[in-house]
Image (tube, rainbow, N blue to C red):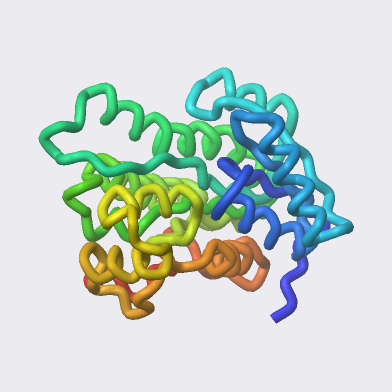
Length: 264
């Protein structure tokens, strides 16, 4: 399948590393002009260099801003007034016993993982609708459906993203704009390595630790391994393409067979 996104501008939040950088790289490889966002300018510039190393002719803009705040969203909008593709990847995760999650932590997870996405959809969706073309994708998680006890606050925020995606898809119905969520299973990023070692023996080599984590905490996985960021990116690039014009309001799964229930 030849996906051509030439002439499109894609904003990818939380894209200085991991899944976000892999998504931005995939979109750039398909011809899109990509905007990398994050809080640290140095990390963004490093990410841009890595991206250009993979896609030498890529057009890349970096913008350091805190998208968990209204001011950060306004700074992004001022720098990038219009976007054809919006990928809300910004998110935090971590383990905490359910009864120990504080009010502040609940608010932080909601503000970071949900409200930041809502703000940017409000910012860019009207222009997409006016132009008659656009793609919005919210990166959710298998934890949205199979809530893990050790990270219930994270699961809550990703469940909320499924509702947000469906609601905005209805708002954009019939306009040529699609809004979807991508349910990602446990993915091999630097952050997940730290998380895995919170739950298994830190003395284990990484390959053994990964297998032990999947055996104990994600036993439904059919892959029996972590997903690579590029595998998530492949799905996002497809959903960003003209070929995915009939897919909207959906929760599309890249979960390694972990989810054992049907998402409506």
